Image 1 (cartoon, helix red, strand yellow):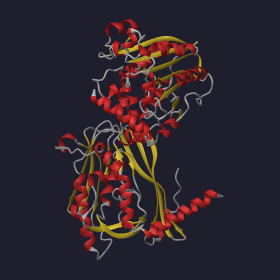
Image 2 (cartoon, helix red, strand yellow; image 1 turned 120 degrees about the vertical axis):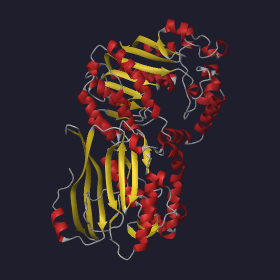
Image 3 (cartoon, rainbow over the protein chains, first blue to last red; image 1 turned 90 degrees about the vertical axis):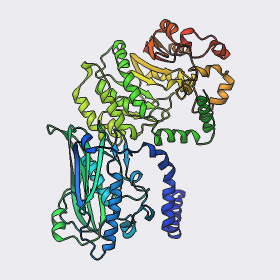
Image 4 (cartoon, helix red, strand yellow; image 1 turned 180 degrees about the horizontal axis):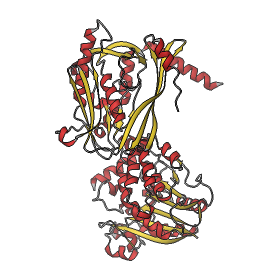
Length: 290
Length: 316
């Protein structure tokens, strides 16, 4: 009898605190709680940069490119400009970083806190599942690409947070839905470990409005990676449409024999647009996860 | 010398603060990742252990049911047991837990461990390679048919009677109080099959020596028993060492029904394993005899020069 009442009280207290304490204070509290660990683990994180990447890391393990402007939020050119600035800063912080064997790369340890003083500009971001304008908004494009490169390059994902909203309908989508990672300094990080027998190198570059990322290695790997999705569907729920899928990753050796097939992520998020009938009919027929 | 004393004082102080010992372990193992070098160390010594196990075990290692009693921290042992016997075996630990942050390192270490050619099965290496991307050690135990028992009581282990062919521990038993060690030896006897082997490695050094090599490696033998118990003997101590000499350890296991097959002594500064006579000749003493506390004055020359020892007992 007593335990449920305590839980209810705890929930009520939490709700009251959430309403009474401003969001900025709550965010700083979360950051402060993670700070001691953050400082102590900093020396262990990947940070070293490589002088001559082309010579020492000739093999491209994975690459991807995506345009900075998709013309999705028309009239919001200020936000698009801000996003381009933020992406360029984040990409420059990640470019040339070497991840040694068994070392962990942390997005936030490299990119740092997005603030005006450090050159970041206002851009579109998600706050508690709602679109909003914030300093450093749009950096998720870099973390999304980093996540994709890590998956395709055979890295081991240590920490990743999915987006809570699907903001825009697909336009010429080349990768499965949900292959992204949201980041929020320093509470939600993207981290991966290099389990390969050699160090890997990150290359990021923004040129002609296109963000390009590469994961390079000094020697060719003895495996292949395939990232694919399962059970992709749109479903109508009482509070709107949701989109769901399961991301899987398959490792095989060079002869094509399967080494490992693992579930990487289960994505389920609210959709901010009305899916077309084609999407809902065709894709909702997909089966669930294995 | 000063560094060791500062570390010793720090450990004594931290362990006396409520929650201090747990916080210290969390800080060092979890955040600072201090167990990273552990796998590399094991990778170097395990080929020697395997050679001895093969010589003493009355059955082949293939298919043997191995039990590892460890302090915890890395999943190296189940992975290497799988390579040796085809099964990850049973892992018990009393204080620590296996940390997932060391998982890839542990598996890569097990793959890189040099084991005899006739035990080297490429299919097993291939299966281990696939686990390099595993995020949790549970997956390793599940895949390799092993069992993990964490936070066990050393005097009451959750393993069936006469169920194991080989037991191994490293760097654990020196931290058990003599009565606990005797109870663990009884448990070991219960769990092992008749004729099975118990292989235990005890680090007899004062562990402050690991922080400062200028400190005498048997420095703890200089402290009288009441003073040692006052400083290190409390329940949450981070630095307790039972200070048993190799001969006392052998006598304790023999009392519990084991037969000592071999006692290999690690001597410094050469860092090689020798038998008793050679150790007494070649090893450097861990402390000058005149500084030994009364309880330890009768220690033999070989014991005074033994930094660590590998014991092989057979259940008689």
